[in-house]
Amino acid sequence: QVQLVESGGGLVQAGGSLRLSCSSSGRAFSRYAMGWFRQAPGKEREFVAAITCRTGNTSYADSVKGRFTISRDNAKTTVYLQMNSLKPEDTAVYYCAADPWNFRVSPRPEDYDFWGQGTQVAVSS
Image (tube, rainbow, N blue to C red; front, side, top):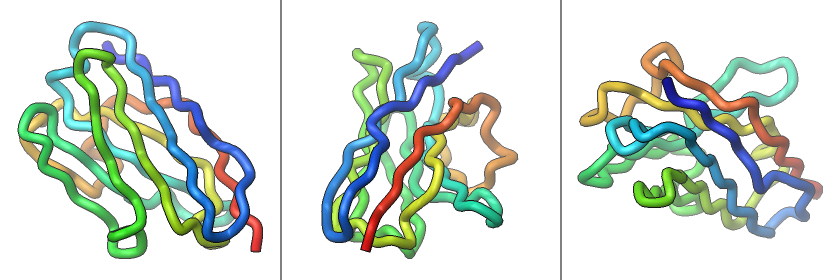
């Protein structure tokens, strides 16, 4: 079992930056690939970024490439999402999730077994 808790959300002006953190309880963290997803009001949950558990391979949605960076610290059982050059369309609740197939970077929410409660990011224009 993996419990995930996101933090770091908030209100920021367009062009600004935020760093989201997702802390995990349990010693299994280093065996999971990790992903970030987001959901805006009235929209479906969408993939943002993912990272494998050991090799650090990453994948990004086209909408965030070059602006967002996912990373992880297995010793701290934490995954991060550095978000730069934020845009109003990045406004959403951001969720981290754990995928037991640790070698892949999947964009599909159904591949992730464990989810955090989400953290709100609001970007003003």
